[in-house]
Amino acid sequence: MESRAKAMGHAIHPMLIVFPLGLLATSVIFDILYLITDRTGFQIAAAYAIAAGVIGGLFAALFGAIDWRAIPAGTRAKRVGAVHGLGNVVVVLLFAVSWLLRLGADNWEPSAGALILSFVGVILALFTAWLGGELVERLGIGVSANAAVDAPSSLSH
Picture 1 (cartoon, one colour):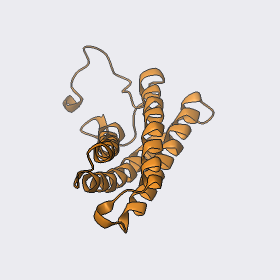
Picture 2: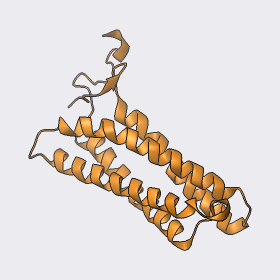
Picture 3: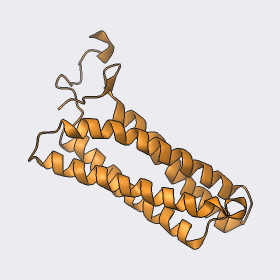
Picture 4: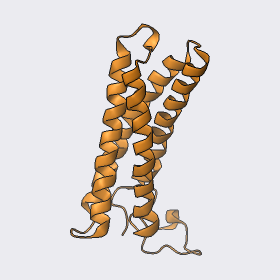
């Protein structure tokens, strides 16, 4: 089943998800580095990465919802897509609350609660990313009907 939202012949949603996924994962790495080194700067970088990741996640979700609506009702793909999408909404909410907990702190100092929310968020994101892979790799969602090893360029149409 081909994606409904495309740019230059390719699905937009998979192009966009790399940004929030990478930014949110990087924020956790910055938090870990801050905990290990206690160096100012890592927690600030984490806060900025979270903010950008949440914004990117909301933007990617818009295109994911467009594609999800096109999946036939009553199919495994529709159910997996729903869990994938709702799980990612939870991921974005966990990181958004983590960011809000840091907002009033001196130098964006993360509280234990902010750190826990981010760590749980990144673990959940690994699961929802796997579900996204299941949708594409196993269930063929977002894959062109003309896909083949010698298919012409998507720009040739």
